[in-house]
Length: 333
Ligand code: TYM
Image (cartoon, rainbow, N blue to C red):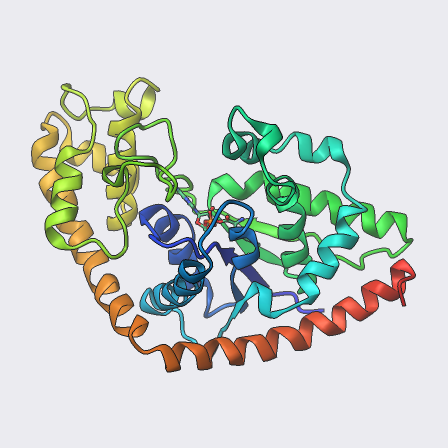
């Protein structure tokens, strides 16, 4: 059993943003040296909502570019497309028969995504965390780096693993995957509303910094980011009344690797307009080179396809071997 294997996924829905970067991708880059890593483009998760097939295909390549542009080494890590490993769908079905409806009913992300009209949501959106459990357990991953919004899905994955091991008397067959969640900034919030997470699905583009934004756009978005009229002070950390201010301080802290408290102390008594100038400069320094690299890799389709083909081959080797054992345990082989 590999004690140090990572699997994580990103939906290729375009517009990767600062939340994806600080919440997940930055951790992938740091962890790649210590772990054997499987980084997956979750295209099957992306079809749980309405989508355009051509755009999905483009987004798969764009997301692969973003991972490589952010510093993931495609030679030493496995980057693959979820749908290129058929075993995920097979295992998801087996897990659909393990997971309980009551467990899925508790998933807050489904409630948020389905909105007020749950009856019209796809069944796929509902069982989405079960597919996610299949992604992780397929590779017997020991660690899963994700943003805080995926924590509940990870708990469901662990529940499925426990029930599988118990139901089939297969003690320790699945090990319990541990989430790895950034300590400082596990949830980057929208620039327009400090109580909502930064997301690709929020209508206003001003709510997020995309990895492909140019300098002017970054400056504009930070200038327009919602704050309050009070100067920077310790009540940003102590209380809950200044969520937008807290978010900007958190982002600043993540980009400078300084503690939130330290950032507040440094800027105490100052107004947000000065702070925002410095924050824009930090973001430009971090994001712009990544954006340029994304564009460069994206135009090299052959290079990307080769990486994904290689990932497909390596992921299938592990997945098919594990699926065979799982099917035997369940009685399907
Ligand atoms: P997705 O595509 O929504 O997001 C990809 C990663 O980015 C993190 N993230 C954030 N982190 C902090 N602040 C934010 N505002 C923010 N927005 C997104 C997410 O937590 C995630 O780590 N279901 C997953 C994809 C997936 C997966 C998996 C992940 C499919 N199978 C197996 C881990 C393991 C998703 O939709 O992520």
